[in-house]
Length: 628
Image (cartoon, rainbow, N blue to C red):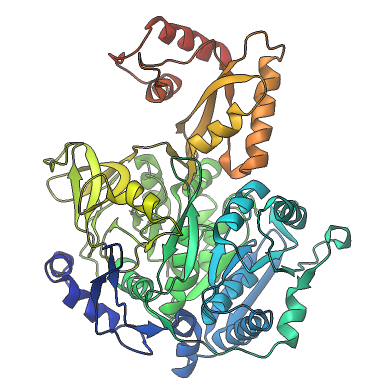
């Protein structure tokens, strides 16, 4: 179907359009009420419908005769392991683990935190929770105990599901000491801690009292059937960085999400049931939820769980090896991964070793992709590299291209056009719509389409103030953008204190809180500066307390360690520059944009509100000295 017609239908007759899309999935009770308002007058989809997303991912395909199709491929070059699971095998493990959770007293509406690496048991845990109506919160395995504590205290889980360790290239990362520390620091007790023992080394000394062995629980438990849940029943919580430093618990529904993912797989990614689809993302991110687990499995695609890095396991040909070996038709990754491969293999020599003849499309998201990387990809891989854009909040693409047929046109550096269901506008700060080629705020007219966030967990006030209060009747994305005369949109970056490090959204204000807690730091600013590989990385500018004896090198070392301990290596803060003072407005506001511009060595205008222009020269001198 023509993409423009599809989009027009989705905007002009929303209820009819999304009723038709809902017919593409299997409901226990098909909804009569397609669109309504919740108690806070926020739009909801399919409120009276009933279904189970684990049934859609697994059981439905078995009922249709595809039980012996490969559902999951696990490829772990860091542990030298490969394993496949059919839909039948996945159902056995998932249903028995779900039965184990029931035997521990977990029931519909309870929450469970999943803190695990890229292994099949993480996917099984997610689907086992969905099978019995338990709301899961997956926490990225690279996060430090503090981040785990924040999530435990907010969602109050009945169970914490973890593994003994993750593997980072050749280094084993023990999880249990981190979990034990988080449990100590958390305000509320977690009733059950379930651990999958990977047995990579002798790890008995890491075990602590009260742990439940994952495999023993599965073996002794009776399989649990899928229960029927309301379409608006929360499937999961996923925490995303906020400007206050405290992560926001995004709530995802079940029926709208399943409908949106089925639509995505067909129209946006153009993937046929039975094909192999690979989203190279960690389960802890939105992409991992939507397109490593739920989207491909709902669409009866084989999904790949990859545990490794694109350039080091064993070399920069790993991605092409996997695409070739498993006949991947469509792949999704962050531009950072492609940039890293390009850096290691600039002439594409490793690409030539593999048969990529069945590889159709490469999707990129998480950060803007630079033109040089797109050019390298076109020259050496020869399939379309399609940039698109969305957020944890949306759960599926907001900007992109309809690729079901080949009638789409890529504009390099653009994230595409609005996806059906997203009535996107570019507004100025006063709420007036801007003409083409003018930069403004990307906002979306309500209702958002199915699959977008239901709200923030137990915090409607923050939901309203973060997303719905800036322009009445519109969702505020927090991103700046420009739209051209053909309707293509170019994302210009965040307009708040959130930066994008290799596709991961991180709060600079959270980092500032950590940096400012150093006993020798008087004040600080953390900004995101340009980085050739990761897109952006955080950089701290700090002012020391008068008379502090600490050296600049030691304070930098301390700050790097503190941020790593509190947030994790994912923060990638590796620079802390000591300055005499920070540039401020006359009212005392730190001019972070000016600091960022100076660090990036870009042209700038002296802000009219600056309290002392001499500080610019001071900081420039300091930057030159620091980088010498």
